[in-house]
Length: 439
Ligand code: 2HG
Ligand code: ZN
Image (tube, rainbow, N blue to C red; front, side, top):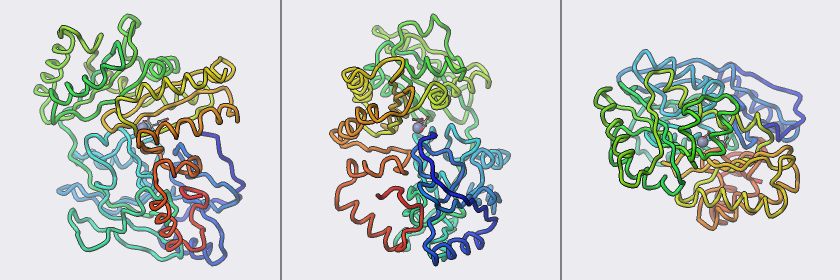
């Protein structure tokens, strides 16, 4: 994001859990802050030092420790890159239970520490479900070995859950045991152009009903986000004619056991959508080959990169009722307009995209520069809007450094007080990722 910059002079790249433990103990004895860092692909400044903390990079811990092809349980060092794990399990006909645009550089330890959501959550659920065990170096250097490979284990408090999404504030995840699902035998996708946002909800209902068990993603991109992705070369799925009159787009993916069966279902869905008396879509294009399949995904996954190429991004990753997605984007745009900030030299674009099936909207504002004026127009406005819907100010990106002040919009006083007690108990000297998650 280029939004945060510390003054660290030191990066340590341990190769073993024992080395991580010794570093952490040394730092704890001397009250030296540590920032654990994975692929550094987060969007809320969670992996960036704020002062002169030591950066502890997990990038040298890249061993797969074990894989059981029968159960699909993978045990891997925290520094393994998500894509390399995907490649590792592929010959065994398994896939990773999560997928995200940053897969080429993000690391599994960082994914778990931030409880990354991504594009497969609709189908395979969150990491709170698929992570079976963790190895964690606690802030005093103790190694907490909970690296079990059990599907079922009801023996008291499930401590590992505390580290999933703690963003390195309670300890450093050094290894992960994770359940990988069998690879679907057939996957396909289609991109649908919709005349009005109001059609997204009924479309989601129809698609769920018709595709049932083979539906694996239902992603939303508004027109602004689509145009920006195309402008910056992130894949081209539809022709000029096909996008004419479209207010937004939906990407539907299927993953199932039999190609002919799945394609028939997808074709029947497309036909019924196009032939309806009042069609919910203008048009739909189904991938005809692996290259088209990738290009449709590239368009959706490429929005973030397109936004960064266009300018400085203000990002809001919110959970709100699906019916309010558009209202939220429109209200934000109106707010900027009313403050005289919507112009080529200030705010260039306001857009929404995201994971419809998970109720997660990515509201992005692209500006020419980060300015106080824009920041003040956006916050607390957006957070108050989210709170008015009892939504979440961070659906999947975490709190990091960016949202510590906004935590209270989604967590009440009692919850925050208990979070602070837990933090103080694990890390009484406050050395683990200081200034993140909690102020
Ligand atoms: C996505 O869904 C990512 O593409 C990034 O979560 C969203 O850049 C963003 O705001
Ligand atoms: Zn996302």
